[in-house]
Length: 435
Image 1 (cartoon, rainbow, N blue to C red):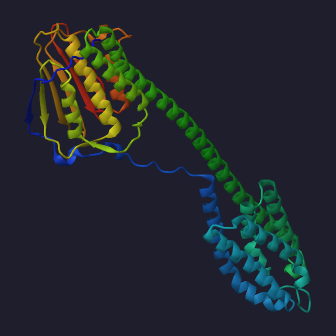
Image 2 (image 1 turned 30 degrees about the vertical axis):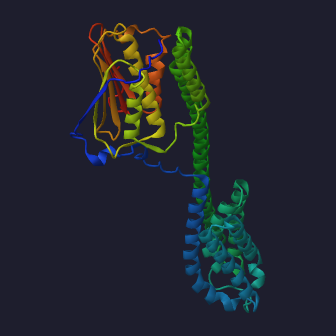
Image 3 (image 1 turned 60 degrees about the vertical axis):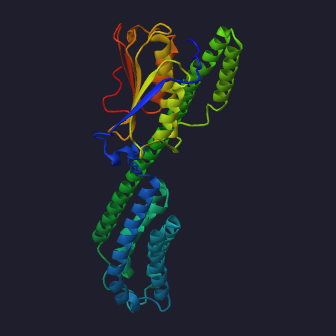
């Protein structure tokens, strides 16, 4: 590739076209911000809150159901002890319910209520204060047995919770057949105990299954994030490689060839200037990251491309439309400018013999995707895109991969004797790259 030849008065002709069917509100659309944020997956912490609040809600309902029975049996308990028992049980349950609402100390308060309930069951016979030592009906503690086993499932580790869901109902079954628990038939006490055990085990199984499922979701999410992070790092490395390859091809190689061909002081000065520009571009290679959200007016990009034409003595016709409201991300503007520069340079160098008149044009306009389309065309000798050697980096690296990295696409239409058209579109359309 030869170095571009400077000239003091570049013969550049320009005229404008009306925007046509491009709606003004479409010109400033930012397609990068249209994607919605994905919903967060169910996590272990979320399911813990849901389960604890469900247990708290059920506990409140059962507490209201138990309250009349507690008042009815309060006189059957020893003075002072009955009040202390009531305060301990209902106070502990109230603390557990409040903890589920404020999302603090849930395990501690749930475990505290479960322990208080078991202690109350064991101490119940010693608290009874009736003349014959017989309780009329079942103890009001029965109504809270399921709440206690559910709190144990929320608070305790799995094996401790399983033990509690067996121990608490069995303790109630024993109290149930004693005179202090109503003196029920052993079969009835056993049935009550088995019922409470089954209900407690079902609640424990449901909570355990939910915890395991959400733990698996959390693990999968963590693995996915790690995989995504690795992919992002790999993509960043590839972007940097494409950028450096493009700079080497566009600037460094051009500066070296210009220096090799310099036979006059003016040529040496041009080669020196190109070398300084190449060093500057290498030093600033990372100044515009792929995720830069700053916006650049489309008119600024057009001005840079027009200034680019001043480096060539061959005439270039410009066709552009008004797009005052259109802006592009900085990284996209930089990529489109560099790709256009390479395409124009390729046309000047390869479309025809030096000095031969070859019509060339650059068309720049907004598109219906809220971005822009740039077409570099000539009626020169053309080429077969399928026969371009892989070691030639101009079309593959400096144009196609650079635009693709910025989220655009390149369409190359050319043939021997039929001229060349390189159409650069940003952002990527649904049709993709048909080059």
